[in-house]
Length: 342
Image (cartoon, rainbow, N blue to C red):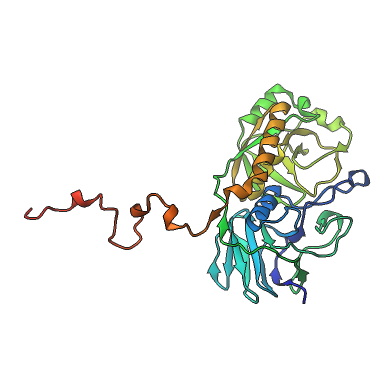
């Protein structure tokens, strides 16, 4: 019998994603695939498998499912609420999913979360990928009663987690072809403006709302449509910036004030609506160096894995934990009244 997931319910925004389809820009098809590539690398590290394995992406959506066999899962990306037969699961970690148990995942504050299966999801390959490209009409969103095949798993470890990192809300940009059209005063104002992540966003792009005036430029009305890529920050006619994401179009005519570094896109994808961001330009050479450093870090994520339950022998300050009520390290004895004291 084929290993499979059965979907009991799914809201819009839940889809199967892998690394997407490279090589089709000339035909008008963007790469698509997972919006949060860091989440794919984290899931691969937690389960000990390639980051090319297809997973379930939850773009602010919710899903309930069960598995035909005992499986291993990993939860990465934006923090979400996950329960297994009602018991809460730790996000950013790997877990066992027993056959028949019900897994429920729902948003906490929004953002893109990812559910990984050991062995990967293995729906039919279309144009070299298993991912759904919703904007292009390739595949569709996951729906209730879907049965999704799962590949073979040769691993066994669960109960691993990656260290939590505080959310950095600075988006670093490199100049684009139209950056100079905005003028130095506007570019300086951009770097001193707070932007709020809007509720309007999907796999094509995310709207940001500036604290103050927009960034429209009259010169932008005369540019020709040209190639655009994920990370480009387009300024629409009302002056609002949109950060393009994995299912963006392949060409566009809005002026681009800059391009967010790929390594910074997960910050935007994991934040909920209402989160405040700032933007800062970096030279192209610095951007290349930052991307190389991030690629090296992602390749070594498996070295950062920690057990969910720590071995007491590996906790140097174990006696400082109040493991049993009333039992401490003993360094508070001088605070107790001495015998014979009033």
